[in-house]
Amino acid sequence: MLKNGSDSYGLVSKLLHWTIALLTLGLVALGAYMVELGYYDAGYYETRDWHKSLGLIVLVCAGLFIGWKAVSPSPPLPATMSRLQRGAANGAHHLLYLMMFVLPVTGYIITTAEAKPVPMFGLFSIPAFFVVSDFVRDLATEVHEWCAYGTAVLAAGHAGAALKHQFIDRDGILSRMLWR
Ligand code: HEM
Ligand code: HEM
Image 1: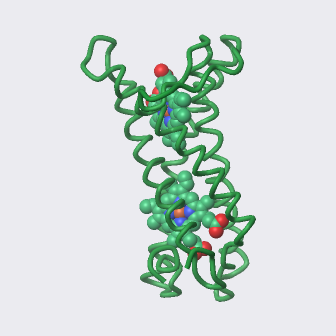
Image 2: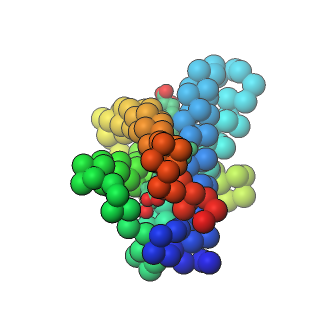
């Protein structure tokens, strides 16, 4: 089923969620690796170009994920969860949604600060639509770094909660994002 059901996610949401999840976690690792590379190390440019292209794919997927949610609402959290648990889950989801936009947008600002375009897999480029001051670029760099590592921590908590629901509470929260 393409659309979300009353107690299960549909194929579109599942594909978008897992694409975003894998790319985001992969980009945190790639980002941490690439910033350690020196200017003359092999892969200095290639890792950065892949990071930027894949990062903008996250932005596209995030737009589609939210757009699709408006067309086909998510299944409600089970009534067996307490109000506190539901509030924590919703809060974490909202923060994760926010990060799907903050990370690519700050990455775009850092990259285009010197009016450089963003290469997309060597196929085409996204131009620098505006040029910011050094202050804004440095602020974007700080926000990008803090939010990236913060997202990894948040996603670990989010994944841990999904595993707890699946294997301890046995309310099928993980399976409705996987196979149900
Ligand atoms: C979900 C998307 C993204 C994630 C999770 C992510 C994650 C990261 C991480 C972990 C770092 C290393 C930070 C550090 O230790 O200093 C980094 C650096 C960087 N990212 Fe991203 N990033 C994303 C998207 C993007 C996009 C779309 C662009 C550009 C279009 C971009 C451009 C950069 C640049 C230029 C750096 C290096 C900054 C520096 O030299 O200090 N990122 N990113
Ligand atoms: C291995 C890591 C991950 C696992 C195991 C996981 C698992 C899940 C599960 C089971 C749900 C459905 C919850 C429900 O049934 O109500 C969910 C929802 C969600 N996940 Fe993840 N996730 C992971 C990583 C991520 C990452 C990295 C992000 C964002 C960058 C993310 C963003 C979201 C969002 C926004 C929702 C809420 C969807 C909605 O609005 O209904 N997840 N996740």
